[in-house]
Structures are given as C-alpha cells and as structure tokens.
Length: 147
Image (cartoon, rainbow, N blue to C red; front, side, top):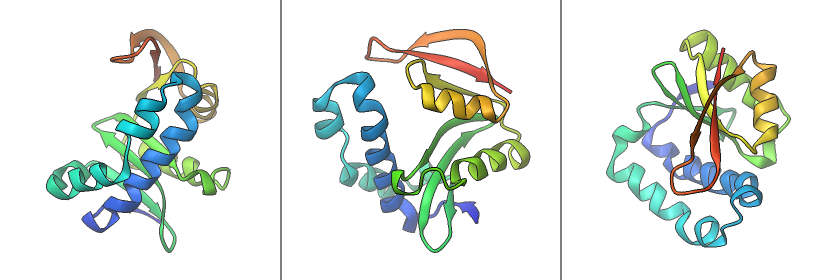
C-alpha cells in the first residue's frame, strides 16, 4: 500500500535514505567523509521530528512496514528510494506508477553516472531531455528526464 508519510515513519524513511544513498552513491562520489560522516540517520530523523512539514510531500510503500519512499513536489519526482533488502520486488515500480498515475509527475533529475536508475526511469517512460546541471558541491552532473 502507498500512503502519505507520517511522523511515525521518520526513522524508517531516514534509514532508507541514508543506507540506500550510501550503497548507490559511494561508488560515484567516493567520499567516505560524506557517506559515513555527514550522512547519519539520527540527525535526519531529528530534522523530520523538528520540521514535520518536510514529510508533507513524502509517500511511503508499506506492507507491514515501510520498504520504500517517494518524495514528490508538484510534478517533479525529487527522490525515490527502496530499501536495498527489498529491491527487485516491484516496489519502485509501484511508487513510480503512483507518482505518474495519481500525482501527475512527469520529470525528475538523476545522477549521470547512476546508470541503474536511468534504466529504471527509461523503463517507466522517461527520457533524457538534453538538460544537464552540476550536482551542487561535487564534480558530478544531473540529467533531466521527462515523461
């Protein structure tokens, strides 16, 4: 089931975000100081607790417990992450279908070197628009994809 995130989901959302970003982005950024120093679960949970409005645009996939999340702003998919323990079970596709069919999402930005994510988004009808922009504070680039 996909539902709106609540404050009770803050810890699980933070776990998914931090651990999945470490797994997927460490090979790209190769910055352990960020991956294991800056990126920590507790400060992110505390930020959600102190600023619950940050959960307003987050939806979670739950079937007993939260296994994935999607952050939507208007028609932009800002983030989509599935706990790495539950990848390849259709959860990301369910979240994507929700974003497209129920929320009208039609664009996103993805790291240029994140080939797995690019293939996933292409599978769901997104294609590269030709727009690129630097990922702030890094030497990497983001690609804009539109449906």
